[in-house]
Image 1: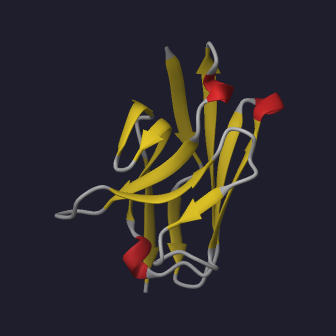
Image 2 (image 1 turned 90 degrees about the vertical axis):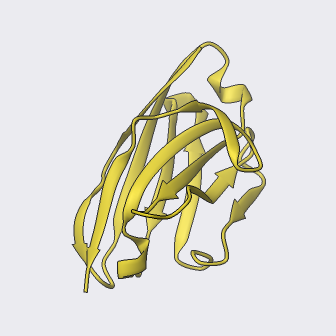
Length: 118
């Protein structure tokens, strides 16, 4: 089992920045690819960014390319999402996930709310 706990969400003005953290625990969590999904009210959950277990390959949704950066520190059992130039449309609950396949994942955190005001 893998346990994931997100932190770092909050309220920020458009153009601002936030850094989300995901604390991971459990056997072999570092063997999995990791990522961040988000879900806004009335919308489907979408994959925002993902990173392979060694950190040498990343994926970003077109809507966040150039603004968000995903990283991981296996020694610190953590995955991060640095979000810059935030827009109101980035408002959503953000979820950390492990062992991602397309739009699905085997392990999920409880989510953290990000609200961007205009």
